[in-house]
Image (cartoon, rainbow, N blue to C red; front, side, top):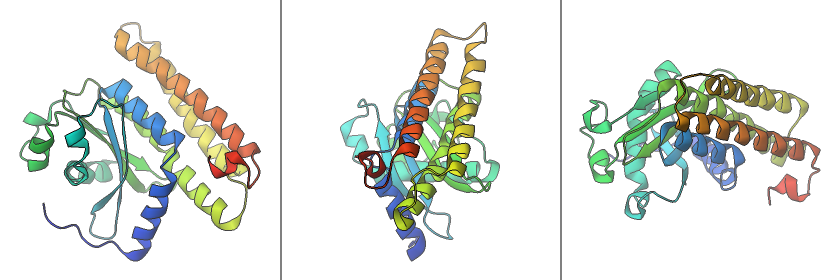
Length: 246
């Protein structure tokens, strides 16, 4: 694999800060759970551009414990697969779902795909409040993907919380202000409401498969957990356990 372009210092520093924040992050955990429940992809990674060349840096990995250990130890190969989907999601600001990467021209010939044995694949843009593409979530599995682009859209709505939370946390730690301001609460609640509403619409479909119905219920449960965490953080004072994230 070609050597990645060097990141601009500011971009590299910002990504390093975000990576530290993601060590314990309810939003990323929820998005990974939704990727698994809705699309059948048991590994989720978060990546962001490192600079002007469109190269991505890997910020975080989440899996449900079922991903083979040797494959999980290959972050460069995983990042190469994520990179393949980046031009698509940044160009459309919409999700990409590949049911079986063995037959997809975008991925089939990649050495990283063969090395990891990846079949199911999805790439979801993380869209910032200003409409720009902040980063991407990429889901992978050695089984074929079981979801659709519409279901990936639910993951995308949930992913909109990531840049909002990251920016607010960074500002809070740098300036000593409340972790979640009134404006941030409004933005987060709007995104959570969209996820909850779309999950309810999905569950109301009369011909919905049992697996998809269970996934919809899981999403609604996750939204409730995130909303409770948001209320707790809004009430927390600097220096408290909730404030520090411990």
